Amino acid sequence: MTVRVLISDKMDPRAAAIFRERGVEVDEMDGQTPEQLKAIVGKYDGLAIRSSTKVTKDLLDAATRLKVVGRAGIGVDNVDIPAATARGVVVMNTPFGNSITTAEHAIALMFALARQLPEADASTQAGKWEKNRFMGVEVTGKTLGLIGAGNIGSIVASRALGLKMKVVAYDPFLTPERAIEIGIEKVELEELLKRADFITLHTPLTDQTRGILSRGALAKTKPGVRIVNCARGGLIDEAALKDALDSGQVAGAALDVFETEPAKDSPLFGTPNFISTPHLGASTNEAQVNVAIQVAEQMSDYLLLGGVTNAINMPSLSAEEAPRLRPYMTLAENLGKLVGQIVGEDVRSVAVEVEGAAAQLNQKPITGAVLAGLMGTYSQTVNMVNAPFLAKERGLDVREVRHDREGDYHTLVAVEVVTSKGTRRVAGTLFGNRAPRLVEMFGVEVEAELAGSMIYIVNTDTPGFIGKLGTALGQAGINIATFNLGRRAAGGEAVALVAVDGDVPQTVVKTLCGLEGVREVVPLRF
Ligand SMILES: NC(=O)C1=CN([C@@H]2O[C@H](COP(=O)(O)OP(=O)(O)OC[C@H]3O[C@@H](n4cnc5c(N)ncnc54)[C@H](O)[C@@H]3O)[C@@H](O)[C@H]2O)C=CC1
Ligand SMILES: O=C(O)C(=O)COP(=O)(O)O
Image (cartoon, rainbow, N blue to C red; front, side, top):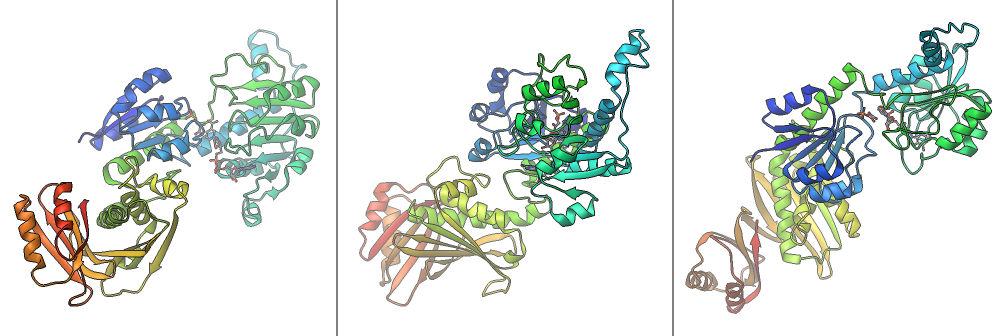
C-alpha cells in the first residue's frame, strides 16, 4: 500500500526529497488553516511539522490513517501528545538538529540588548548619528543566569564562558556533576534572579515552567537585568515584563517567542529597549537542513521499517533492530491475541517473560506487542504505541521479566495473565529465528502456528474424540488445515488447536460444545 506523508509547515526541500527517495509519496502544503488541514489529513500516514501546525485532538480525530507526527525541531508543545498517544500515533522530534543555531540566536540577542543594536541601527539609517544616545554594557565579567540547562542551555553556557561571563543555572534536573562538567554553578531560582545581569530561558513550556518569570519573579530580579527568551512564549508574563521595562527594573528584553503566535500586536511592541524576532531561533540554513533530513529519515524508518528514533511517546527501536524484532513482535502479538480471545477482558495483571535469545533484545516493543494483541480483542484502536498507555489507564498491572539463561528452547516469550479465575500462561518460540510457534498453552505442551482461523477446544482425553470432532466439522463444511494436540496426562484434560479454512460460525461452536467430553470451545482469529 502506498505510504503518504504531508509536510504541513515550511521545510527544507531535502525532507521531501528523502521521502521520495525512500518511496514515500509526499505533499507539501504549508500555511493551511486548521479546517483545510482537517479536510485532507485523513489521506496521510505521516505528518511532518514545525511549530505552526497545531496537532490538536480535533485534527487527530480526522487523521484516521495517521501513524506518525514528525516535528522538524525540538518543542512539541503544539502537539497534543496524550491525544496522539491515545490514538496510537507516534510523535517524534529532532532533539539536537537546531540546538546550536538556537543557542547562537540567544547569544545574538544578548549582544543586541547589551549594545542596543536594533535601535542604534534604525537611528543611524534615519540619518541621526546619535553617538551619545547609545551607551552599552560589556558582557565580560557579568553573570548570566540560565533558566534550563539542557542541550541549548549548555551550548549557551559554553559560549558565555568563552565570552568570560560567569554562568549560574536554575534547573531542578541538572545534576551537580553535570554542572561541574560544563563549568556552571547550579543555583535556586531566587538566587539566580538576585545575581544575574542577563537571564536567558531554555526550558520547554510545561505546567511547571509556564510563567516561571512571573510578575513576582521579575520583581525579585537584579535591577537593570536584561532578559532573553528564545525558548517558548508563556514562560514570561508579558504584561509584567512591559511594566518592568517601563519602570527600568528590567533594562532590556529580547523575545523570539510569544504567548500568542504569530504575535502581531503585543503591548510590548514599541517599548524602548525591547527587541523581538518572529520565532527565528531555529532559522539558519544549517539547522533547517539538519532537522529536515533527520525528520524525513526518522519518519521513513518508522513507516517503512518500524524503526523508532526520538519518539516522545514510545521507546526507541533502531531501524537495524526492527527487522530482528519483527518475528518476535508477531509472536508476542499472537500470544496476546490468544490469551485475549480466551479470557476476554477479565485480566488483572500481565507478565511478559523473555528467555534465552529473546532476553538479549529490547523488551519494550515485545511487551507493547503483547498488550496490543491482548487488548486488541476488545478495542479497535489499540496498537503498539498506545497499548502501554491504555493498559495503564485501565489499571492493568504490567510486569516484564527477563531470564538470560536458555530453557528448553533457545528463545522464548511467555505471557502470564492473572484473571478472576486464576493464572493462565502461554509461551512461544521462533523456529529458525524466524517462524513464530506456540509451544505451551495453559500448562499443556502444544506446538502450533498461530495464523488465520482456529478453534481452541478443551476436552476430556477419550478414544474416538478426534474422529467425532473431524466428522462434526466436516458436516458443517469446515475444512481442517492442521490439527495440534496436547494433553496433561493420558485420560486427563486435552487441548486441541485446530486450524481451519474460513470463519467458524456460532452454530458450529454450539455443535462442538455438545460433543461428549467437551469443556470449552473458543473460535480464534489471528
Ligand atoms: N526559538 C526557537 O526557535 C527554538 C526554541 N526551542 C525551545 O527551547 C527549549 C529547550 O530546548 P533544549 O535545550 O533542546 O531542551 P532540553 O530538554 O535539552 O532542555 C530543557 C531543560 O529544561 C529543564 N527544565 C525542565 N523543567 C524545568 C523547570 N521547571 N525549571 C527549570 N528547568 C527546567 C530540563 O531539566 C532540561 O535540562 C525547547 O523545549 C523549545 O521549546 C528549541 C529550538 C528552537
Ligand atoms: O525547534 C523548536 O522548538 C522551535 O521552536 C523551532 O521552531 P520552528 O521549527 O522554527 O517553527
